[in-house]
Image (cartoon, rainbow, N blue to C red):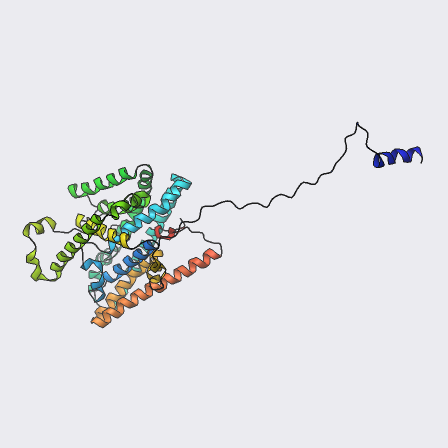
Amino acid sequence: MTPVASSVAEPIAGAPPASIPPQVETVPPPAPPPQPALQKPAPKRELRLDLFRGLALWLIFIDHLPANILTWLTIRNYGFSDATEIFIFISGYTAAFVYGRAMRDQGVVVASARIMKRVWQIYVAHVFLFTIFLAEISYVANSFQNPLYTEEMGILDFLKQPDVTIVQALLLRFRPVNMDVLPLYIVLMFFLPPILWMMRRSPDVALALSTFLYAATWQFDLHLTAYPSGVWAFNPYAWQLLFVFGAWCAMGGAQRLSRVLASPITLWVAVAYLLAAFFVTLTWHMPQLFHTLPKWLEQWMYPIDKPNLDVLRFAHFLALAAITVRFLHRDWRGLNSIWLRPLILCGQHSLEIFCLGIFLAFAGYFVLAEIAGGAVMHFFVSLTGIIIMSASAWLFSWYKNAAAKGGSQKTSPDADLAGGDA
């Protein structure tokens, strides 16, 4: 072998010189597949909230119709409170549940911005409903040459001074009949950020301040004026107590009350109060029973003020809620029943269904006034309205699910109860 060949072959065949480290090519082991991040399971949707908010929407629609057969099935005929208390309490509960979690995860500023976005959505819905409602009433009044519709629905001032009245309507001071709930909800949601901020630090102090404002409302006659005269049908200074109480329950108050609600004493007190309230309401419908009430009780009890959320109404709602929570558990299988599905769907799309219910209530009022007002027609109008509301809720739910599957929308449980993309 030639010296050149030997010098080339030696590093290949023999051991390398000590001064030159061996070049060992290593292949790194394959990287382990990425592990999915552990995420908390999404909380199970509270179907009881959907159920009872849907029930409240149905009851509000029926109560807005003239007296009929189904009217006797609404709770206002058997006690002091009605569907409005259910609606406002659940609104406060779900708003705190959704936006309280957003305030914890995203901070006060972002959560407050999302709440203001929802306030704007409700305000736009109110203005849109106001416009459609005016058009509906005006069309019926002109077509059938019956000006009583404009007077009974409270839009006569709008027809006299539309320029002034429209400004007052935008300021929430002018509202036709049956359009008082949304302005109340707008005001309560507008003040939700400071309420939640305080709730996260001291829920009991927030509830105590709310109670103090409620007491001051009665003591000093605090109210908001309406146009052209009078005051708001639902005084925000008073009804905020029910809204804040719902938020307090959502922020841990319900768990703290669980032992009290499970007590047999609480059950019997609630039952006794509901029976007493039922007897009092019987005296409203049966005058022969009115004299059975002691005079001192009448003087102390009446008037049972709805605009200022009378204490008797608030207590009646608490008694109903205590019994409901005791016997209707969260995991009750009936909540998944197909028979309750229409109610639950209406509760899941409360803003849209509420607006639709206001429109349908006047349409039903018109049918009963112009066509027939018998018991059969009353039942038919009520049932038709409920079917339309349920079908619309199903359509809204179908569209929302289709959008979610397409990836264009992401919602969390109970978000649509408080509203928006929470």
